Length: 98
Image 1 (cartoon, helix red, strand yellow):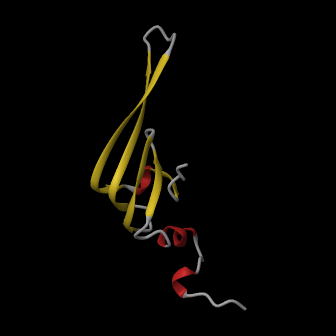
Image 2 (cartoon, helix red, strand yellow):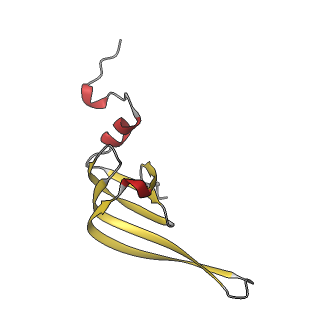
Image 3 (cartoon, one colour):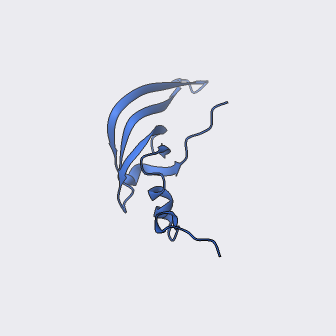
């Protein structure tokens, strides 16, 4: 039988978030927002405090005639950010870069 430490035991979904403390996480939020930053703290509502955050907002502009649309992204860096849990859709490891 393999030994496990109590800090690495996964008993509920929030334990997966706990294991990412002080590591990089990727968040997908409502409103076509994505965040990638270091997870400093979280609570049971999935409110989170992230540091060294890169935020990407995707904006879709539809022409008034309805004939076309343009998609562009806005990026910004934020040193420290509080994220409300009700806007979180996905929490994962950051995407790998080639």
